[in-house]
Image 1 (spheres, one colour):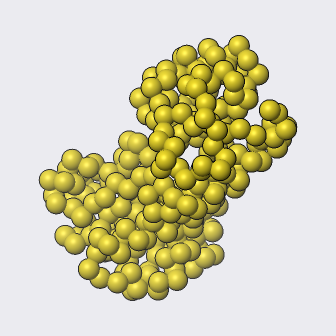
Image 2: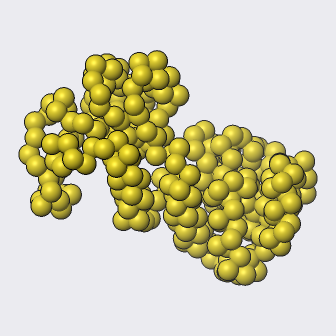
Length: 264
């Protein structure tokens, strides 16, 4: 199999043994792998000055497959309409779990860097009890922290209780906020608004892990000088090697299913 890289400095990749020189023409490729996220502005492919509309047009005229991550809904819709074969890494459960593990470890590292007190015996609130919330709570429990988890679904509340954590319903959140030392948010919509920010203690540490638009009123939090960090794309920042291995494994599985390995 030939591997060609466009839009990157090959010297920085340390792949001299497998990289082949190639032109900027991607017509020869059987599979196209883009950076993650698929796009940042909805117009161009992330990391390359290639328009999404041009890529979709090219894919529609061939049997090529596309592998990316966090593909926006508009692009998904257009590719489905044109019967383009594409894979979004975020749709793979195993990738999401491994990604959540790396995110959890990075979030804990950031919390330690941002505070002058130990996680042990600290009151830590996790907003949202999805993949990241569950793994984060489990990892924090090893530090001896007092863990509080906010959830809305009854099954999540039951699971929180079964794990020995303190469960919080959103309707009662305000009661607990003044006592929290560290807050991790995983909910991608406004939850820590101006009113709730007013309830926080002066030395609280807030780490927002939610994707855009986030879950904190960042402007007001800044005015109140809250110790806050909106920490995104953690795996690529704190554990790039592991993150790359997760992606590689999924891509290899896809290539195997599509029988591309033997293509020349």
